[in-house]
Length: 331
Image 1 (cartoon, rainbow, N blue to C red):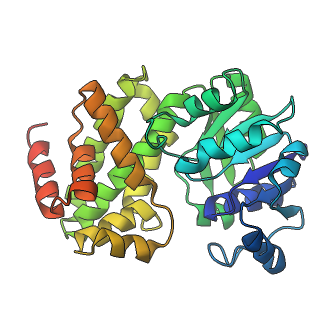
Image 2 (tube, rainbow, N blue to C red):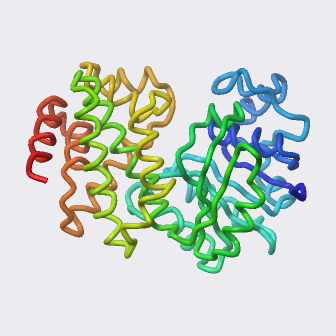
């Protein structure tokens, strides 16, 4: 492995975890954050005390709050900002990109208001010829930071670039596999958050493992159905970035989306649940965007629709889940 200079944009749990993992592997990594005070704390503590307090920064991990300087001195750029801030960060970066810049991201979710997938946002913001790759799959930030075995997909329209990025990221415990199915990886990475809310609601209501398994199975079918609108094959959802990420997010309480659902199922309000989690819950935004897409293209996706109604129309969670389980009898 040849060490590279890598910049990670977004100093939340995921950006920090990826920065730690890559620095630990021997790369020279700069973690950028938009808040100078936050970056100053990370610099002083040499860890992200808020999200990953037990994971000290390797010596090859630097901190920065100057966007232009960070971009101009790195060619391998990884964006780990929330989906609603993705385009704005790209546009701020655009004027400072070098000719050799590679744009990668771990951001998941459809863009707010436009419903665009992340690679479509990159194409609009930076140009269709921009070298780009998505990193997605069944992975929690804490486990990546703890160096536990993890497998992900690196997806790009350019399979050679996907292989190059995958080789850069690969370690003995962080396995990365190249793919050119970028749309299916993005759809899987977004929809699994909505479906994890549904699974969490079911478990919060005390409906048990059987109901959860039914919702996961039906959710996979909805994922495939939406994928067809983007010319994605059914097979493209049967790997790590589809069913793998779906199972992980629906079944483990490290998932913020699942935890949100659990609390809603237990009777907490949205405000209470969000305050308790204290971090971005991407499934809330994704539910709205997927609902808009389904209406636009006349796609029937009952689970996503019921989650949308719970989040935005105050539908009783028990009514929603019982309705979904009644549908399962007819599938």
